[in-house]
Length: 78
Length: 399
Image (cartoon, rainbow over all chains, first blue to last red):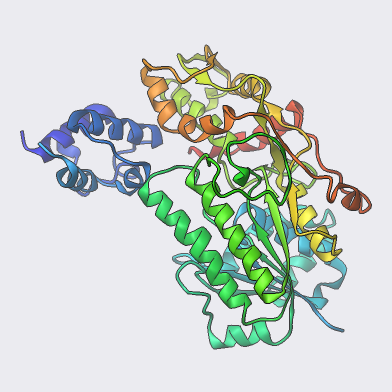
């Protein structure tokens, strides 16, 4: 599975949103109606799935689906 | 008649805006004889002046006066005695426009208060970098500006918790850069304080260093509990409320319906948090500077710590949250809710609620301010609850 697709599926699962409704430019808070705890749960899920630690300052900068994909692509070592 | 001239950074923050109201309140009968320079940034489509004018109408007028005629007078004259200067003190190296520099330097600034700072209590490279730039470089930039002006008294707002993780009696001028700090915030605030002290020695300028503890809402000025910042203990309540909101979808039942949460909180049974009301902080700052009370360093704190074992259950009861257990060390096998807690509110607060008891000494100025009718406050559970009552109106900022 492509990384982008995998991340989108995780988001859909966590936020209870349809996969097709998630675009790269979707904003977690405004478009996907996530609250601060939802976003934290997503960060924890990304950490678990890709075996990395996302610092609070980096997590603050992840505001869209694309931000998450770019961050994981940059920091994930297979 | 010579005008009394004030300058403030951080005037849109909690301490800054309350100090602004305190200055106005103390000069309500002679507003034409004061000048207040506000150094700060406009945001997107709102100028700095309009941000402050809005705050004045929504909040400030109640602090300043109960009389309607005086409230109207303050609003009307606000743009006469309040002069906003566009300055990003982090990026600007202390440079302002020529017109603003002329305005600032046309006469001495009697009282300059540098309050602006980053108060992020978290860690990590990015946050630490912001703290370094804002608190240390930003303070240096302000001193570069101050160096070009004539200043009566320069005041700097640090933090009582820059004493680090040690406990016991702490003098207000205690400085130890080698201690263990709870977070980069404490370290950057101590280092910027040292920069101010060194600057004072070199330039022979009169300085006052103010060290507040954990700042809560107002407890003497109206509206009681008023705050614009829901962090530290408010942030804690916000965390539990956010968890509760996941289960209880209807907003009108958020506080009414009880909930059981499987969370073990680690804190010390014999220590507490020193919470100080913001109106005491600004009243002390105003008095100490304008009445020229002797000394350079002042703890702006409550007389007592509020024990964690008392206010934590009180707060949870207030939120109608049950089932929380208290433990001596951070649990190893965490539940999902515990993982969330120790990654957010718990991460920030655990270093504070597992510390030894601290007695921040205030005997260097306590008697002097009492002569002006101000007492160092005692914090009680009832007062703590009134702070929560105000925050409840805003759902602790979680909306």
